[in-house]
Image (cartoon, rainbow, N blue to C red; front, side, top):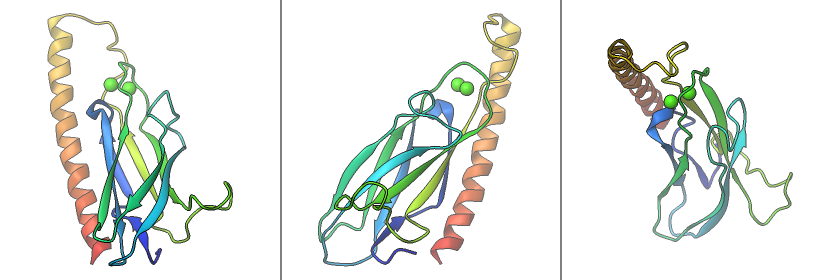
Length: 159
Ligand SMILES: [Ca+2]
Ligand SMILES: [Ca+2]
């Protein structure tokens, strides 16, 4: 764990149609200012096809305890497997390649859950509308389960 700063959760999940994912960065020391960089790294999810790459400098003032970063997710109509990318904190005063902040909580993983199913592209009748509705319901259930599992995991991490 990094002494000064780290992600609140090490794993976030988001459905493709959600449009964005929000990750939280926590400052662990009181009354001190910190400036860090945050950037995304491709894994199976690739920017700009699946999400928008970010590379930003974040300033925590003395009283800040956390900052939320919003990363846009690309929604398409095609089926694809669930994809992942990484969000990483870095030291903007160091050279690229040597700037990764130490600690295993300075990286987190984002999973983009697909909600498009194979074989339904371009189908525009009532049957497909019905299938869409079922799909949405299934997705909602899946989302709820993921949230439950993740919040359980997070509360274990935080205690
Ligand atoms: Ca989609
Ligand atoms: Ca898709």
